[in-house]
Length: 291
Image 1 (tube, rainbow, N blue to C red):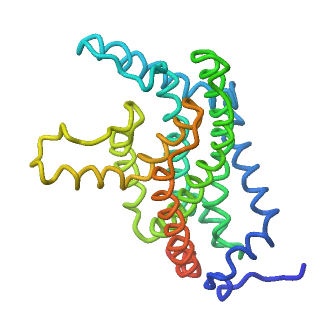
Image 2 (cartoon, rainbow, N blue to C red; image 1 turned 45 degrees about the horizontal axis):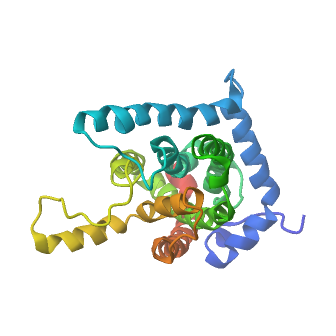
């Protein structure tokens, strides 16, 4: 090997992140494959759970929010004449990737502490491998989503808009990687971070237009009129409040996603990636001492 020993000095340099990941790509691949096998080894239905989880959630929420509550309130939920089930699943699939990736990635260093204490390698591999594992579920969920849309909306609904899915997801993926690098590093020193993520994700599920379409404004809020524009901008500061409507535009409306829905998450994704990678590299040499 051209590099016999990975040292703390190398862990400390931000400029070495990409070269180190390329050099240790086989280790990254092995960790992803090992985690996938461990996750589904003792599950009788294996990868089928990646289909059942979003579909069962869609059925439950469709019944409650698509039929039960609207009947009680005399209103119908949905977006642009599309079925509530396809509208809902279009938000659930990317949201579940975010939620699972953040939960697994944040705790990944703690779960691999024995490896960190024994072997020198780029520590970024551990949280990145945790996120890459979630891509399998996302891919299966995406195929399930396409099948549901074709079944409920008709095959003609799926057109060139599907080609914009990778672009939207690229923004989300970079954002998730940046957040996971930041939170996994902080979680080594402050174990409250993992509990904080659970609370934030629970709140974020309802603060994101998953169950409902993106509101044009938050005018119905019981706050002073002067505060409402500020509240709406705060609502849009949630990157998933922009990305999920972009997914729906591409997959349900067969349209090019609005640039306004992509530029805010894209800027935040780049910022989070740089900040997360910088903090992770800065703290990596001392991870073993705190685990």
